[in-house]
Amino acid sequence: MEQTDAITAFAALAQPTRLDAFRLLVKAGPDGMAAGEIADALGARQNTMSANLSVLHAAGLVESRREGRSIRYFAAMGRVGALVDFLVEDCCGGRPDLCPPVGDCA
Image (tube, rainbow, N blue to C red):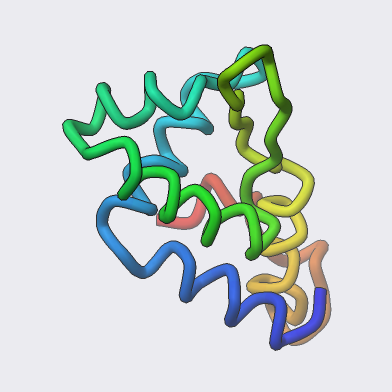
């Protein structure tokens, strides 16, 4: 991942509603959620949620699939993995064998 891609992803997540929507989609897993379901779950207006999902989509953090009249969204977990890899790329001075798994860093 390039630095500009990482910055775009972080900028997309640097807004409360978008961060909440992204985390909700991560929790939903491979089933994803329809845009209206996301808006309802977060108490947001549908047009506002649509705009926020567009920002997340443009950053590559969510994928979408049309289902009839609605659009179902999914967290782009491959992109999330690439973002995490970017953050820890030079962990422990470039010696990943010395680094604990990312989830164990506390």
